[in-house]
Length: 225
Image (tube, rainbow, N blue to C red; front, side):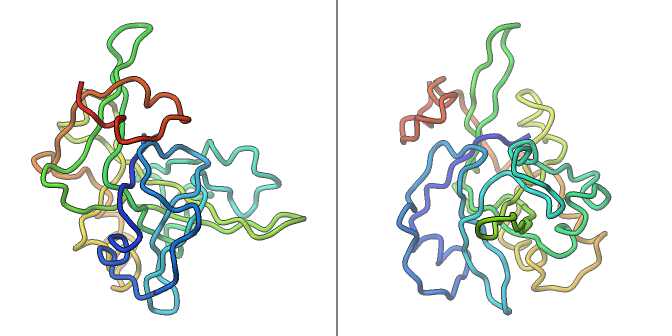
């Protein structure tokens, strides 16, 4: 699964990296993040009116059929193997795909019956990637429309397998146009993108356990121990 990640890009770096044309200023609460957790508002990239836009969406999908947001945090991930069939994700997979801005993520390795060690994972050369995501809109009886997203996961590669039995789908820039719908392809072709990232392009290291507390959000969280 994917339950914590980082986004250390500045607003200008995000615009340049993802090829955005919107010149609006960053949201007032935008800043580098070292411990993004479920229910946080996170920058995602999606296609609208033929252009790429960056929006802050809440992590934890609320299906359009939901009566309330109580179970949103339970839908932080969608499995690649079943995303085209599961009711909450079937329509978003076909029509509402996004790129979740990230530059690293955490996983916890079980070291004993009572202890887990957190690890940080990133690309070796810090080459850009994005998590494959899907988003949905939900209109409550009272209040504004709420837009939420989930990160797609797949089987782990050889680097992640010793840490966890799932990993987020990481898309390299060459796959972004297809995932965003800028290239028209079949659902089967889209599903072919939902595979483990090349482990030779990745590295990981153990980090301190402060990352387990969502209140901690500073650069020291990714320091190697």
